[in-house]
Amino acid sequence: MSELQGGPGALFAIGGAEDKLKKRTVLQEFVEAAGGSKARIVVVPTASALGPDVVDVYRALFAALGAESVVGVRPENREDADDPAFIAPLNDATGIFMTGGNQLKLAGVVTGTAFGRAVTAAHARGAAVGGTSAGASILAEHMIAFGRSGATPRQRMSQLSSGLGLVQGAIVDQHFAQRNRYGRLLSLVAQSPGLLGIGVDEDTAAVVRGTHLEVVGRGAVTIFDGTRITSNAHNAKRSEPILASGVVLHVLPATATFDLQNRVLLSYGPQPPAEEIAEMAAAEADLRKLAKEIAAEGVSPRYYEERKRRAGRRTAKSAKPAKSAIGAGESRPGATEPITAGAEPDSPDPTQADNGNP
Image (cartoon, rainbow, N blue to C red; front, side, top):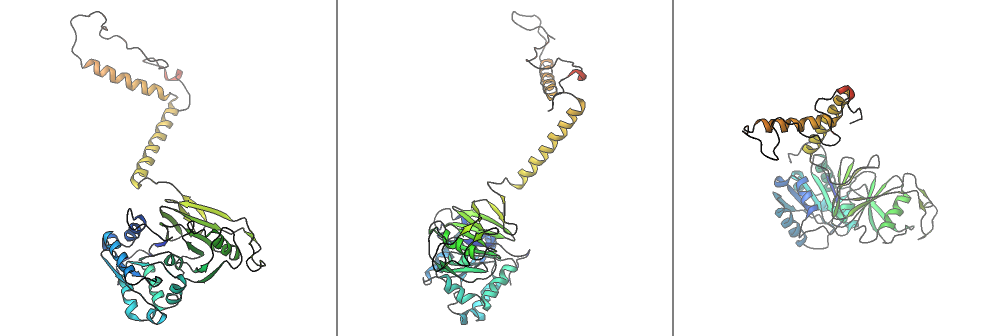
């Protein structure tokens, strides 16, 4: 069994066509989540129409990215998916990756079988579970089996089947912007407003940890929230357009994080390292303390700055050797240095100083 601890692992819903040649950002993130140099990854190519080549490709990719071991397991039917020989490799996996292909086939073979339960159990003990294209859709409780493209939501535009249920309360669609799947996802949200619609672009991953979703990769993740939707989905006929008014739209680029439970944006943009955040917080606390001290004394901060500068000049002068004569254009020893415009005199009375706020 795997030695992973610390609760459920990360979920990677990848929108398909992930970069396999250059930066490989999404795949690198998956390997890191699976344990990095200790990652033991099982590739499940059940959805793919390709032969052993698809496993060879991911074996080479994950090995190049530092994984300790990569094996392929391909149940082709529900009998295979209940066979202990197919299930055994999952028991020691720190990462499970499902390839793209026919998502209805993947759902028909995996869900409700011992294999599907083993994937769920691996995730619960800490393994990273992910997939690309069809392998992304099956992560949700309800997955899109098939459907048409288009920007306008229409009745009967797509059909759902059962997924693994690792992402609760959501429907995941893939190749989202590239194949214009806005309409079909929005139609499903109109029909089931309690479900979040999550559309993932190519070479992009929606990474779910607990109730938080983070975006990784080159594209964006689009979220439809139908909590307050007004729709006629209940009586729209055949392929008629569906009314979908009041839907909240979130388009999240890389680094954005989203709360799936409360359905709100949490953060976006590059975040500084934790140590830098701690240093900035400490510096801010020091500045606030200094401001309070200055305000309590009723003295302008400008006074302290000027005083410190003049003290430095006096120290530098006293360190110079005394001259025997004063030449033309030279300052006499002990001469008072000119004060810059607006500065306080050498020995101000604090009660008469500038009382402006720092």
